Image 1 (cartoon, rainbow, N blue to C red):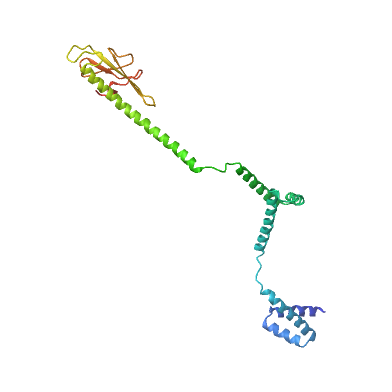
Image 2: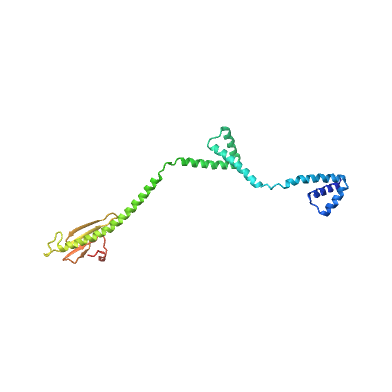
Length: 250
């Protein structure tokens, strides 16, 4: 064909595709009607245009989603092979094929490491005790806590009670001093000056109170005179030089 024929073929293709203005299309149709060769070429392009119109109605393909689904399918198949490989379910030939894929495929190597980590984790869990009586364990822990709390309360009650015992002991000794206690004379007779020594030991445990009757206070004790006839009470542990105001009142 001549150059003019090539130009007419291009314009005929544009006419079939509807890419030409109405004025140009009318002129071209008039030219085609007077030339049998152009009419035959225009008919061929019209058939091609009708065939392509069916393809234009097809929906768009989500190639990204298709690639993602294909990749997941490949990875799922790879994961299945990896799982069977690490569980020892593959034959020797398949093992060699999978091992070769490990060396050549970075994704396969990553999946293999993940399955190996999961396998090691499951092996470590198998060593843990399986039959644990959690209810009994909870009861033992709760019982230990209750016993510790009860012991703390008991120590506080003992400390408070020992203070009452000390006050009661001092009061009793003051009464005995008025009536003529141990080593004294009956009430109304001559009474020699006596000193009642009260020794208090207060550790963290129960505590202890010791009472002695001495004519003079021991070293390190402080005598507190009572209102009775020539009798006193010494209440000071050795080394404790607290002021006289700290002593319990009698």
